[in-house]
Image (cartoon, rainbow, N blue to C red):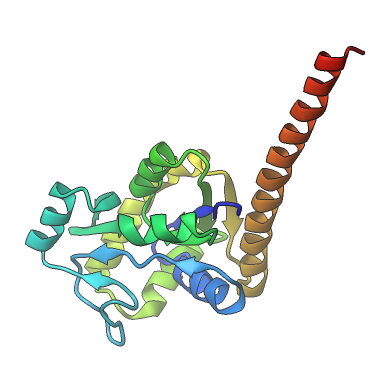
Length: 209
């Protein structure tokens, strides 16, 4: 059985990565890893479905007990990926999607070199600002913090395997799915071809050309 692919999806706050993730899970056979966070739940968010909501003390205990694949602090709150669920799904051959910050993405890349890293970006900074304001979930001060953070985050874009511009939701979802499918095809066929060639060439060496 082939091992599942760990897919890291990151992007600026307001780029639409959360919506893309939901559409991928709804349309295809992907498993979404639920992140842990210390931020307060937004209206409609459910513990254990959207996020695992924890106190700072609880989160720090998770760090100390090595229960997280990665973690980072973003705009005053902790975010992290619980380890157990992800490893179980990968070992069972299932693809796992992680929606995490760039710092976390780099941590995952270190621990899982075969992970596929995809960065979601809006077409422009102007549209990013409009999307943040349009959500109606943050104060002007919080929006300013997120935009200032985006100035730092743009430096990480070059470290990702692919960048997908979210100008049209349907097209962005299709592009991300195609990239994951291609990565599966590439990985699977490379392993099979290597094994096949190694076996055949070994036969030549044994029998003589």
